[in-house]
Length: 258
Ligand code: C5P
Image 1 (cartoon, helix red, strand yellow):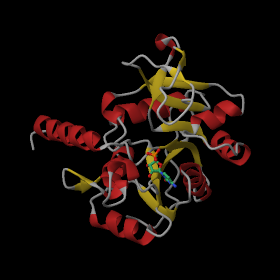
Image 2 (spheres, rainbow, N blue to C red):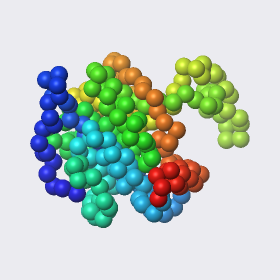
Image 3 (spheres, rainbow, N blue to C red):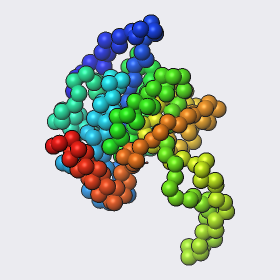
Image 4 (cartoon, rainbow, N blue to C red):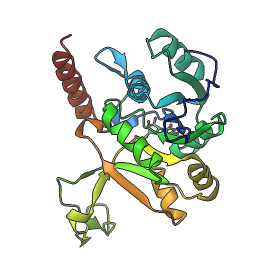
């Protein structure tokens, strides 16, 4: 981990236009109650390494990402700094750790507030998606570089989705009120990528509680676009997801010849 949040500007490409520098914000301040009792979700281990370290490496593996801002639990910044120091991370990437807030949205905002000048593209990546492949990360960055203000990796749905109304009582069944056309629905993942100024404006403007950052940009009236997501970018939420994540890691280790 280095202390210098101001690395030298990136080289100017042949086009003469400097390549926009990219930072990743990782909100990791959630308690992960759905995984059951134990350590906060981001500190649970996968293959012996904390999930958060996997997520940080997944961002730092992209050569385009030169800064990773980790948003720690409000009282856990020192613990997260110690964790970063204890694990090998790419030398060319800088790291900052800031304390998070009560909601994911607040945590992302605190991460954005800590970003130094000079980073024009921002990725927001859930610590709970530790295994996103670097090609997915690069695909998101490329689409922002190509001019999209907000980009989400997305996958088609395997399941049909029903919209329901609240049940009439505790033992009553939920009535289904609609079946949206599945071919027009997507499950979205992270990292979501943004033009920095757009994301800052979204966080300054939208005060509704939302579950992802792209929906705040939608509320500004701007177009959010998708790029292909990846099945290994799934969110580790329930105990079964941990089993799947361990299996994905084991397969990668086998393929990498470990
Ligand atoms: O709870 P959920 O799984 O939707 O959380 C998504 C991400 O937001 C997780 O990486 C979690 O650590 C983070 N989060 C946060 N601050 C909160 C709540 C969640 O950084 N107060």
